[in-house]
Image (cartoon, rainbow, N blue to C red; front, side):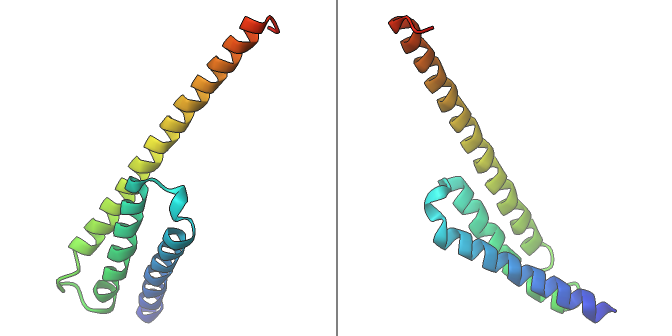
Length: 108
């Protein structure tokens, strides 16, 4: 049963790396710098977790690979949140501008 979980962990780590690599190559223009940095860190550190999964605890990648992965995911979500708030602020400004134009022209 341990071999099953080991294989599942390795496949999940490789899957995360492939998804991140695909998103960074195909959808690069859709992400801001902070999101790209976070995804890159998460993908690279996810790949570094494979030795920690395959070997017994105590190898050099055991603790800091997961710490880098978590840091990358955290940086990604901070960048995503900043992008959301910037988008919302711009939308609110556009709505206010459109309402001001309508009122100026008397369309209310």
